[in-house]
Length: 176
Image 1 (cartoon, rainbow, N blue to C red):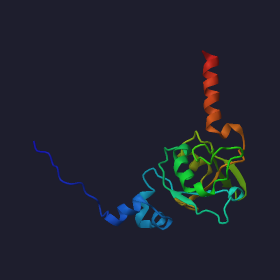
Image 2: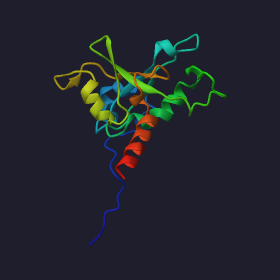
Image 3: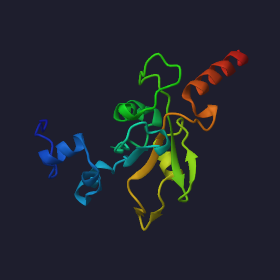
């Protein structure tokens, strides 16, 4: 019995398409020829910073990403902080503007005007199915999915990951 050790087929994938996968832009991700970047369990998300929290003269450009549907908002925190670092408002009373200490939360605009905060403990795919653009004839009404990041003005303490962790520890301690 012999094993076939031939190189895998790339099915027409060129080096330029591999470069697009490494650093996608909106044009690349919405191109019909590049649908495989957002298919197979991936989402196309445009993350913009809240206009109320911008401390610079110009509004920062949005961050485009295409995470897996099984990822969580927490998985995007590092990339979001890095992208918006120069625009994050300083924390009152903070010794420095360390971006790892800056808490953040996300919301999405529903029905054109109403904003709903996104639960960081729910997978992105479920959040997209609940709050994403409507699907008409198998095609989303608007791509990418636009969400807003906030670095202050929390809607409730339950949206802070640290609060949820401490509550879980407290509940576990009570049960034991």
